[in-house]
View 1 (cartoon, rainbow, N blue to C red):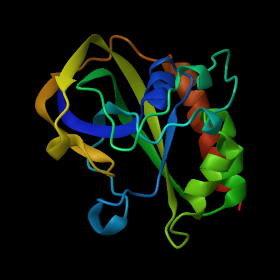
View 2 (tube, rainbow, N blue to C red):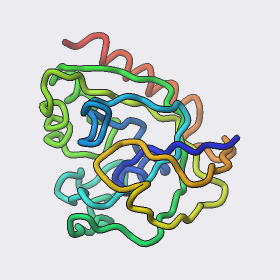
View 3 (cartoon, rainbow, N blue to C red):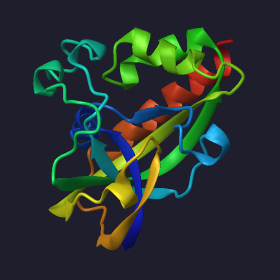
Length: 195
């Protein structure tokens, strides 16, 4: 199967998703989104690592045995490596919407971010719901290195089109199907029972 749509996310979060430590992303929409609102553009996406806004203090110090804080080196505004390594793709299996702070707080077990970061994402553009994307992730059999192209990949936006589609498969799941299904059930319970 070929995929040419990529979803941008902090490099450290992409690593956590690839390792099965995280199964959700939280979105409101970037500055360059369509009318500033988040919209899904594809169900199957390559995860595109970004570096600019990562900060160690916004990550949990120890999460499921991994210290993601130690892997983050803050970079200057606008910095990016000349080569980007793509190593994971995902099926967006569920999209949940929430405007409730208690629901966002209850999602803490599903991501590597400090609680205040998730809360800040909820409060930004308060009239818009927070999108909670559930990702069934798979590592690429062979990582793909691409050259940075600022016109194609730069800017504050969630979605980018890759110059060439990437061959993906379900051979290397980040977590097994049963574990993923159990986590989805928990997510559904959180979103449906809290207000």
